[in-house]
Length: 302
Image (cartoon, rainbow, N blue to C red; front, side, top):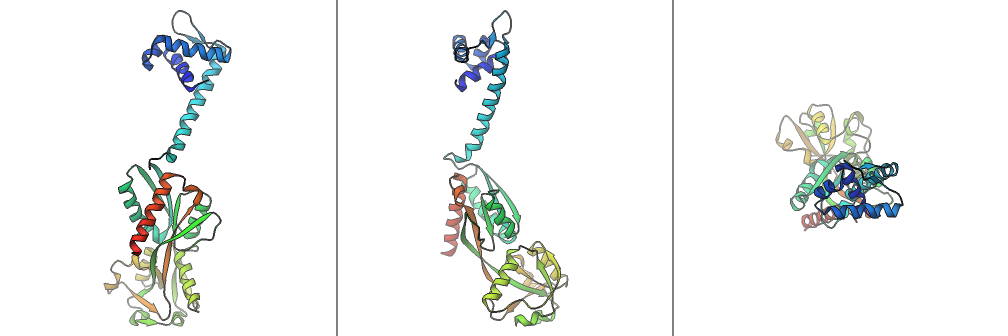
């Protein structure tokens, strides 16, 4: 049984006759007749009643009609699912990113990628680092970007960029009057924190541990989902906070805004990572985006 036979059979039923099907398919009427006869011979039953007027289905023909429609529909659906595996780079790309790379790094990478591969449709979902790693491990996205390196089976992790986290305080805050402070000077201060699972706060804690220090006792006034939200709360005088330096956008020169306060002996520069599953690299669009990001990272480092 061939797909061509099933298509011919369905077209004959839809058109109501051999001649009509032949005209619609651009072939001769005898060719249509031969296809139907071969299908009937293979199945061992008559499928159509050839009387005056439109052809009609036999009881067996009705069963074959249902089968043919299902098979051809599933075949077309399979072809669509396999489209990303073709040699051409096209289709959809699903990217998940934590807040900082999702706002400041990934959009730039996607623009560069779209310029080279205009047939690709990209979807970017921004979450926190832990959720991104979970989603990538479950295969819900093709590529992810985080501010921490996840330790998950089957996930490949590559450093692609760096980011500086800074401590900010309201411009009128006593800490803002000092160029540098000791970490102990934050004792008792009100902290505007990022949400649980944030790569920003995880990086701050890791940097402090590397420097042999830790955050002193601080009152957490609120937990917010983005650096911009933390910046707004600090600007409003609600406390101090840690944000990516990308979020400042000229705030250093705004006397009514915030000030960056350096911490003695602590470097808050962190790495940003691209993560993906190695078994997804056989999809051309995924492989192309991973390679494009690698080239960008290498050029930036150079």
